Length: 121
Image (cartoon, one colour):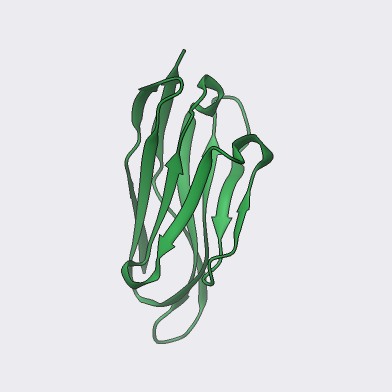
Protein backbone atom coordinates (compact mmCIF):
# COMPACT_ATOMS: atom_id res chain seq x y z
CA UNK A 1 0.00 0.00 0.00
CA UNK A 2 2.70 2.46 1.03
CA UNK A 3 6.35 2.33 0.03
CA UNK A 4 9.29 4.26 1.41
CA UNK A 5 12.41 4.53 -0.73
CA UNK A 6 15.62 5.81 0.85
CA UNK A 7 18.70 7.20 -0.83
CA UNK A 8 21.88 9.04 0.03
CA UNK A 9 23.84 6.60 2.16
CA UNK A 10 27.48 5.79 1.54
CA UNK A 11 31.03 5.90 2.83
CA UNK A 12 32.42 9.13 4.27
CA UNK A 13 35.39 10.13 6.38
CA UNK A 14 34.96 11.31 9.94
CA UNK A 15 33.98 14.96 9.99
CA UNK A 16 32.22 14.70 6.65
CA UNK A 17 28.57 15.08 5.71
CA UNK A 18 25.83 13.06 4.07
CA UNK A 19 22.21 13.80 3.25
CA UNK A 20 19.63 11.03 3.36
CA UNK A 21 16.29 11.24 1.56
CA UNK A 22 13.18 9.12 1.91
CA UNK A 23 10.21 9.41 -0.42
CA UNK A 24 6.83 7.88 0.34
CA UNK A 25 4.47 6.70 -2.37
CA UNK A 26 1.31 4.68 -2.73
CA UNK A 27 -2.12 4.98 -1.19
CA UNK A 28 -1.49 8.11 0.88
CA UNK A 29 -4.05 10.55 2.21
CA UNK A 30 -1.68 12.26 4.63
CA UNK A 31 1.44 11.57 6.68
CA UNK A 32 1.73 12.31 10.37
CA UNK A 33 5.11 11.77 12.01
CA UNK A 34 8.15 10.83 9.94
CA UNK A 35 11.47 9.77 11.32
CA UNK A 36 14.88 8.22 10.92
CA UNK A 37 16.14 5.25 12.91
CA UNK A 38 19.45 3.45 12.79
CA UNK A 39 20.78 0.05 13.70
CA UNK A 40 24.44 -0.74 14.17
CA UNK A 41 25.74 -4.33 14.15
CA UNK A 42 24.89 -6.08 17.38
CA UNK A 43 22.76 -3.20 18.64
CA UNK A 44 19.06 -2.44 18.80
CA UNK A 45 17.40 -0.10 16.36
CA UNK A 46 17.27 3.41 17.84
CA UNK A 47 15.50 6.63 17.01
CA UNK A 48 17.77 9.24 15.47
CA UNK A 49 15.30 12.04 14.74
CA UNK A 50 11.61 12.59 14.10
CA UNK A 51 9.44 15.36 12.71
CA UNK A 52 5.71 15.99 12.92
CA UNK A 53 3.55 17.14 10.04
CA UNK A 54 3.71 20.61 11.55
CA UNK A 55 7.50 20.63 11.63
CA UNK A 56 8.23 19.97 15.30
CA UNK A 57 11.43 17.96 15.66
CA UNK A 58 12.99 15.59 18.16
CA UNK A 59 16.58 14.31 18.21
CA UNK A 60 18.59 11.68 20.00
CA UNK A 61 21.10 13.30 22.34
CA UNK A 62 23.96 11.71 20.40
CA UNK A 63 23.13 13.64 17.21
CA UNK A 64 21.88 16.98 18.54
CA UNK A 65 23.69 19.86 16.92
CA UNK A 66 25.05 17.66 14.12
CA UNK A 67 21.98 16.23 12.35
CA UNK A 68 18.97 18.08 10.99
CA UNK A 69 15.69 16.47 10.00
CA UNK A 70 13.32 18.19 7.59
CA UNK A 71 10.42 17.28 5.33
CA UNK A 72 8.65 18.40 2.19
CA UNK A 73 4.97 17.61 2.69
CA UNK A 74 4.14 18.31 -0.96
CA UNK A 75 6.61 15.61 -2.00
CA UNK A 76 5.93 13.21 0.91
CA UNK A 77 9.65 13.23 1.54
CA UNK A 78 11.77 13.40 4.67
CA UNK A 79 15.45 14.32 4.78
CA UNK A 80 18.28 13.86 7.25
CA UNK A 81 21.26 16.17 6.90
CA UNK A 82 24.17 14.64 8.78
CA UNK A 83 27.21 16.82 9.52
CA UNK A 84 30.35 16.25 11.57
CA UNK A 85 29.92 12.52 11.18
CA UNK A 86 31.67 10.19 13.60
CA UNK A 87 32.63 6.52 13.26
CA UNK A 88 29.98 5.71 15.87
CA UNK A 89 27.33 6.99 13.45
CA UNK A 90 28.03 3.95 11.27
CA UNK A 91 24.79 1.99 10.90
CA UNK A 92 21.96 1.08 8.59
CA UNK A 93 19.55 4.01 8.57
CA UNK A 94 15.82 3.40 8.15
CA UNK A 95 13.09 5.91 7.52
CA UNK A 96 9.68 5.56 9.06
CA UNK A 97 6.34 7.19 8.34
CA UNK A 98 2.93 7.13 10.02
CA UNK A 99 0.61 7.25 7.04
CA UNK A 100 -3.12 7.80 6.87
CA UNK A 101 -4.13 5.76 3.84
CA UNK A 102 -6.44 6.99 1.13
CA UNK A 103 -9.84 5.35 0.96
CA UNK A 104 -10.21 3.62 4.35
CA UNK A 105 -8.25 6.27 6.24
CA UNK A 106 -6.33 3.65 8.19
CA UNK A 107 -3.10 4.37 10.08
CA UNK A 108 -0.27 2.48 8.45
CA UNK A 109 3.26 2.49 9.84
CA UNK A 110 5.69 2.08 6.98
CA UNK A 111 9.44 1.38 6.98
CA UNK A 112 12.05 1.87 4.31
CA UNK A 113 14.47 -0.85 3.26
CA UNK A 114 17.45 0.82 4.92
CA UNK A 115 20.53 2.56 3.62
CA UNK A 116 24.07 1.93 4.86
CA UNK A 117 26.07 4.80 6.30
CA UNK A 118 29.73 4.07 7.01
CA UNK A 119 32.01 6.63 8.64
CA UNK A 120 35.72 5.87 8.53
CA UNK A 121 38.17 7.22 11.10
